[in-house]
Image (cartoon, rainbow, N blue to C red; front, side, top):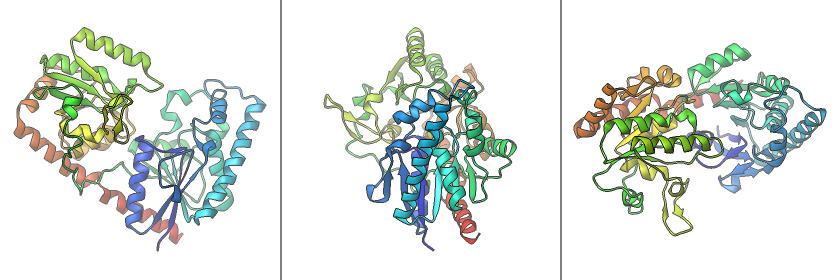
Length: 418
């Protein structure tokens, strides 16, 4: 039975986890004969299958006005309540339009009922689901209780109602065990664990002519040792540990390349990292101007690469995160069969490490033993290949499209039957 699936979120564009994982879900659903449609405030999906509603974007000016008045405070002005309800009512109307336009059978709420970056959208979606009893899969990535900035709020009543809602027609899925336990404890809601995945059945394509020159374009010599930090520059990524590792290796050929910029939450952090790298004698390069979602050209005519253009050229991946909801960059490094430095963040220790992966790991700080282990991996090509192949096979067993396909088919079959 072919179904029409409606994905709903504030944004489906770029390389954030929600956008990436929702595209994977849609690909898997398509293979089962289901057609996906998209509703969001920012979209890079096929416009013939999408409905763009600018007011649904978390960065829309009206939502920004609301957010400035509901976080970090405990009192809510009546005008704030009025504008939340007004925007929610408008968005609820657009959800009715979306479902009618495309004949949607099942909705998938991608983080829109999870992290309250857009409270009116969560309220609108909850009311729509309550009114229509439309079957909905709530795909949760980041809950409000996992982020300090949402701990003090003037909208506890809205959070209780919609983030997430407790409705009989809403089926909850989470990306890690900790979220599953917290959801049950805090809301009394059961859920299914659906980890992030990659298509391990199909290995990465070989280098093409476009990406052959990545190293030279980034200013690296042929004999340089390319350490890639494939993340944004935010404090929870623990990039100071990557700098420390490169420092302790004490090899001028080692270059630390960071793929993405600080964005809007880490300029003090990036300045600290630059000072630390300078003091430590580490060659650290932030190449965000050369890395985008799509290939292209900079204003001065230089090539723009994707992150996946960089992975094949890297000798070693650093991923010393303090916290991650899951760890997409880790799966990508495994996909490209690269050795990875891991800081044993909670989700890794509970959901990933027990599967039997082999990584050089740290417990909050870089040790001499860890440095020697990294040196051995860098100097032993056969060991690198063995580690890469072992981790690839392990990930294929636990974090592949096949794993997610079985879970989604079961969830949808149960929803349709019920």
